[in-house]
Every structure is written in C-alpha cells, then in structure tokens.
Image (cartoon, rainbow, N blue to C red; front, side, top):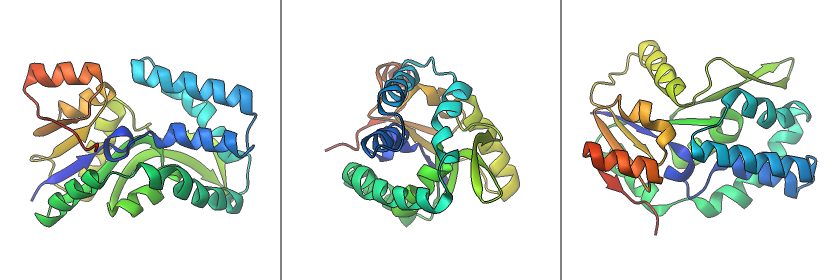
Length: 218
C-alpha cells in the first residue's frame, strides 16, 4: 500500500476552485465587483506564471471570509459547490481515485487553496485526508488571516513532512499527481511523480526527468 497524493485545482478538477470562489463572490455581489475581479485575475495569472506572492494573495483572498458571519458563508459555499464545482468534476479523476482506493492506498489531497473552500470538495471526492492552506478562526469567525505555513510550493513539502511525522504514515512509496510547475518541489520529493494535464513548464520538466504525463480531461 502506498500514499497517493493529489493536487486539486486543474488536476482532480477541470478548473481552479480558489479562482472560481472569487468569481462566485463577484457574481453574487458579495464583494466589490470591479476591483475584486481585477485582482482575482491578476493573482491567478501570477500563480500560473510562478510569480505569485502567496502572502499578498492570502491577504486579498481570505479577507471576504472575515467580512461575513460563518452561517452566511456556509450557505454561500453550498451554492458555490453546486454552481461552480459540480460542473468541473472529472470522471477520469474519480476513476483514478478509485484505482488507488481499490489497492488500499491512503488518499491525500494537498492544495494551496484554503480549507474553507476545499474541505467539502475533498469530501465530495471521497478523499479522507486534506492538507490545505489554513485560515485563522477565532470567536466563531474567520479572521481573514492564514494560520501556519501556506500549502504552496516548498510549503507543500513542509506540510507533508509534518503530516507524515504526526500521523505515522509512510511516505517512502508515495505518488503525487499535479498539473503545475509550482508543485515541482513536491514532485521531486516523491517516489512516483505524475504530471496531469501539465502546464508548459511542468510538461518540459516531466519529459526531461522521464516522469509519466497523463490526462484526466475528456
């Protein structure tokens, strides 16, 4: 049995849940539409280019969580899952998860997107373990600030190593599936790196290093 680790956005999903959450907030009038939409797009472009300042992005992206009571956020999240996430679920991703599940592997999603957005998505996919960027929570509300190490680039390696030490799982024979060159640090850490519908940079690195390249898109 192995540890099967999966990136979420543009890997198991045919889209980016963090970016789509921002679009959803704009469409529902929950944030200042023009400014927020412009910045949401800028940060997404910087992520794809590999130039994202994660702390700057989190200060922007987590702020709406602090501006609404939890009950209201949860209600909006339910609508978000139906309207934005269900349409980008990939049957081939479900098949891949089932193959690993069927061999007794431990399934883990590791994502830079915050836990508030991604926890119900992991549940929907039937993945029991999730490492995501954590959001500080106090007095029944989100503060709008991250908590601990953001689950991004080298932070994914740090978070995984801490999780392995805490849980006792063996990561020696682990798999990691990802679409993004931002995940090269973790792809280089595992025994079985797999590029999934990779961006240009990751595709080039995968070919150079002899990593498998697969597609989960129809």
